[in-house]
Each structure stands twice: as C-alpha cells, then as structure tokens.
Length: 344
Image (cartoon, rainbow, N blue to C red; front, side):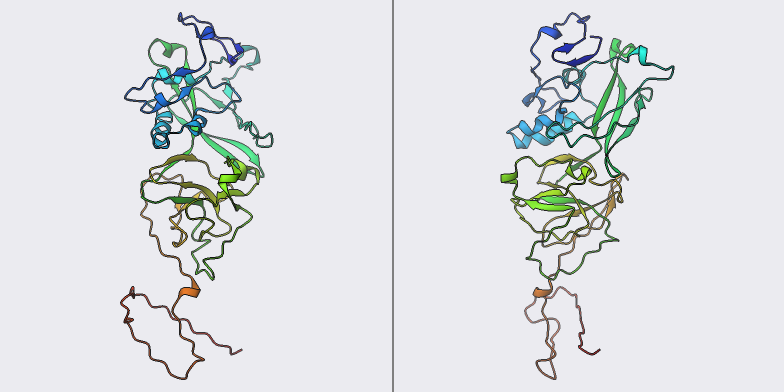
C-alpha cells in the first residue's frame, strides 16, 4: 500500500497489492511461527499516531507466563514482516514541506491517560542510517528526558526499493532470572553507600518515591518521575513498604521471578547508574553503568539494624568477659567494635 494512514477513518492507503485493507476488520489474529512465539495470544491492530504502542496490549493479557516471551518477540530485530505490517501505519513525506535537505522525523510522548504527561518534540532524525540504532530524546520537564531507541531498516524483497521500516523500542529491558523478586534503582553507591539502619522496621519515604497500595491505586503511570512527580512503589507487594535504598535514589521497577519488563531512566540528569535490591533485609548492590554492555558480578550484603546487634553496656560493671567465637555457633567471622563515651 502507499499513502499516509492517519487513523481508521483517515486511511489514505491504496490497495495496490490487491488486498482489501480499507474494508477488512482492523483487529487481526496472528498465527504462531518460530519467530513470534506467544504473539498468537494478542489481537494486533494498526498503531495509529497518538495511540498506545504494541507493548500496551501486554497489560490486557491474563496469561502472565506468556508476557516475557511476547515482549521479547515484539522488540526482537527478527520480527516477521507479517507481524510488522499488522502493527505499522503508512506515511509519506510531504514534498511541499521540503526545503531541499533530507526529510527528518520527530517524535513526541503523548500519554492519553492524562493531558499533563506530554513531552516536547524530539530533535529531527533522518532515515538514511539504515541498520543503525539511534537514541532519540524527548524533553519532559526541568531537563528530564525520555529516551527511546529508533531503528531504520529496509523492507524485504521487492519492497526494498520503496519502503523503509521505522521501529521505536524501549531503550532498556530487564530480565529477572532469580527465584525471588528484585527492585531496580537509579543510584550511585559511591555517593550513597550502604549504612547501618537505626530502625529497619520503620518505613521511610522520600520526595522522589512514595508507597501506595497498588490494589487500590490501579494503574501506576511510569512517566510520572519524568514530569517531576514522585515515583510510586506498590506497598501491596510481598516485601511491603520496606527498603534499604537511600532517600535520594530513584525507584525504577519491581521485577518478579522470570519476568521481563521494559523501563527508562527516571532522571537522566543524574548519573546513569543502576543498583539492585533483593529484599529489605539486604543492602542494595554496588552501582553499575546502564549504558555499558558486559557482565557485572554484584555482591549482596545483609543490612544491619543497630537494635539487633549484640552489645555490652560498659556502665553495668567495671569488668567484662567476652568469649570469641560466641558459644552459640552463629558467629560469621566478623567482629565490629564501637567505643562510646560521654566525655566532652
């Protein structure tokens, strides 16, 4: 087909291939092939400008176990043309608007759930760099940017002389292959090292994130921190309103076992570093760069609560006997000694 498709009622395409695109139902079933495992569970529609992307349909699935495979298939570079054509809308550049240079595209976040979450337009990017992935940024508020990956490829077969395929995908994807849920944070462990908590049983919040009951809140908008709003953490999760994260850290997401989710950095003005949390009884891992490919070995240490540490009060008697290792057999080989005095 050719021409620009603005919506279901503004389809400027011409059925030059003999199809009945304009007269067929927009909702289409997808047959399963070796490259699109799980996509048969989705009802794929043409994604018109200003509407939600293909990943939004994952929220409508009842089969939680299939979501990671479907997400992996949708963002795969090997997505079959048959699937791409069911999702894509057609467009052409308007020659009357050309000023002699190569035509360029701009994109914008337009969250239709609320009018306040709409970004500025991105800088223009060209379509000449076929096979090269570009990072495109959209300004949201006070220097915060939403970043996405844009790739341009040539359609296969005879269409290669006429059609280029533009795909917009999330910049980051996290996969949890552990047997327990994890939380992902944007934070620098050198600026915010792990500290001994005075009271681990007392939840605290910050101006960057708050706890809400997700069962009552409903859908939590992932774009809120990009517009200066605090990130929302679901307190109805298994670990509840407990964390050892610094109050200046930026919460990203909670990832359940075997779950695969996409995400973006909550605040691109900060250092592009990530930290992992495996539970309220553990400290966050050391930070690692989000944009550097490679493997990282993260050491996880148990969090310390001052109230639970064995101690000796020197005001109780003039002399004390301390036996090492402790007779209960629970000594882990570490010995910490604190000396306190009231002297001025």
